[in-house]
Length: 117
Length: 109
Image 1: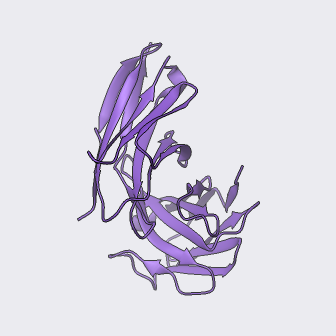
Image 2: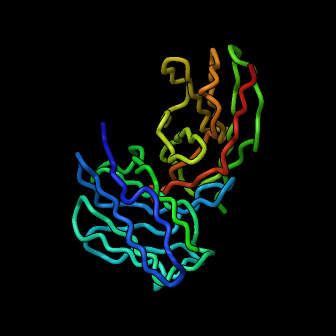
C-alpha cells in the first residue's frame, strides 16, 4: 500500500531555532501534499496544501512566512517552522495524495512531535 | 459554510457493537472517509464511501446516505485496541477534505 515517510518523528529545541520537517511519498508520486497541526485533545487542523512546482496554499490564519513550505519534487515536501517559539509546540502531520487520484484517501506520515523549550 | 458533525465521545463494552454517526454539509460532495487515530499517532485510513449503502470490511462497516448527508461507522466485536478517535471527513467539490473534530471511543472491559 501507499507509504508516506515523515522525518524527524520528534524534535526538542530551543526557542528561536528553525526546524525542518520532511514528508516523502515512498511508492507513489504526489502532486499534492497536506500539512496539518494537532494540539493535544484537539482535532486535525489543515495548515496548508503543498503543490509540486508551485506555491503552497495556506489556510486562513496560518503565517506563510512562519511556516515555509517547499514541494520541489513529486515525492518530497518540506515544512520549515522558522524561529520557533513555545506556542509552536504541537504535533505536525503530513499527508499525500497520489497524482491524478483526487478521490482517493490521503495517506499520512507518522507525524512529528515538536517541543520548543 | 461547510461543516461536519460527530459526537465528541462514546463509550462501549468489549465484545459489543458501536455505531458512530456523522452528518456533513459541504459544497459539492465527492465521497466520505473514515479514519482511525490512536492517541499520539497519525490517522490511518479505514473506509471510503461515495455511493449510498453499506461497505463492509471485516469488523468495520461504513454506511452513506447522500440525500441525508449522513454516514456512520459500525464497529463489531469491539476489542480494547479499538479505543481511539474516529475521524469523519467529507471530500467537497474541489476535492478538499473537510474534517470532523473526531469521536473519542472508549472501550471498557
